[in-house]
Length: 446
Length: 152
Image 1 (tube, rainbow over the protein chains, first blue to last red):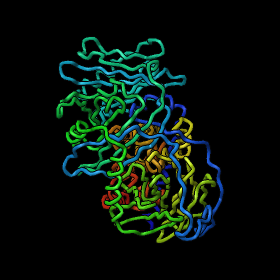
Image 2 (image 1 turned 180 degrees about the vertical axis):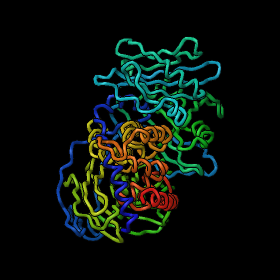
Image 3 (image 1 turned 45 degrees about the vertical axis):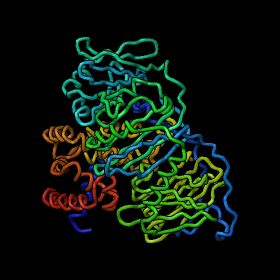
Image 4 (image 1 turned 90 degrees about the vertical axis):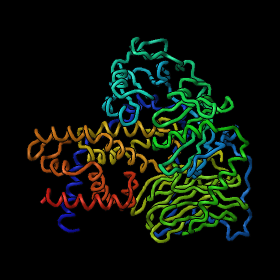
């Protein structure tokens, strides 16, 4: 390191050294409930993993030695205990240049948080204000987190505290000045267990629908997501069975009729009535330039047999598995491959003639230092990943029973793959001369 | 995910995240940026799908810090006016460091911090700030030039 590099290193250290203590999680958690949107979900996370040291400095170990060669008996898989979506939902038309890059049906989830939601609308313009409120803080207010104007301008939403309660406000079709004024003049009233927002009478906005804490249904259901890549970014179709009959959420946005269907367009999302009355859909864009396409996509969403998703997953696998193979692990008759062509990085699992893949286009992927793939192929659950280091000093897989696989180091990376036919969760803690951390996998429904 | 798991993930990474936030927006704004980033992350529909939560949280902090850059910048400039040459209080930067920090953009601070303090590669830095390797390399070169003058 030369003198300048040393000085910059010291400078960076001084910046780090000036850090205040991080806020306690409990203070953040006081507002967390309002951040749980009806389309967000919370999978059940299991108890702490049992750590078992398996490897030494040079990575050659295995959690359980797999039987040698493909002559070993195949895995036996029974029906999945993870309940997924009741049916598939697919768009019947894709805008030009859009293609599927990921699909996951995550299975049963729990917990939605104690929130109440309220939708206000200006009948003259269709503009909407969606507000979620939580109970009063027991602790001192953990805010303000951000400047109201800055937040509303940048994202169309803001989280802040009003009269001792957390408030999450999102706006659609409203000028920032008006939104700031609404946020500043918001009043909360206690009605039973709810903190009900009141907007100024002369604002022109009227309450259109609401869902209070006491009316909220049991917080269980399934969530699935399909990701598409567009020339502008990514678009996610997020599906949720938890609370389909919730107009306060489903109608958040400015109404627009597309192909004879009413959709509600907000700064980063399109929503509408549930599909077949049972599945809530929200199309979320990373770039507002895709909102027009997202509205058309939403309008084309239809119920379909679950097998339709197989075709989408087959198409994704066909796209991805053509990328150059850079590593490979065999576990009995399961083959797990790592692919990398400099642009696309992916992991595919092939079993009994079927292939499923996840790539760096997936929200499940992680980053270059810790890639991971969590997928079900032909009913067999497979977890895999790679670490940006070939000097892994610790690699603990939990549980040991019902999990079979191995790891290998090659060209500066450590690639691992495990089949878990009878498990519903797998945790891997690792340490290396590069990254260290934990992979946590919960079995998806597909 | 249950709240205790969110808490566990947060606690595991809170210290390194607050340091990163401080490097990007200064000690006075770091808590707000971290809180906003974490709330945004765990409230996101993607959160349950995220496997590498550390990397995801770093990205959220970087995004949040860049969004808040303007107001944080104003705060830092106010601090510079009242900061002694050598700060004696905790969580306060001395003026020379502040001067150097203010000479960089928020993105450049992130690149410098992640490269020099966390020793990440250009690829990892690019992922942490949702940018391209080429941009990271360009920003790093510009930052070295600027800091070469400021830290001389």
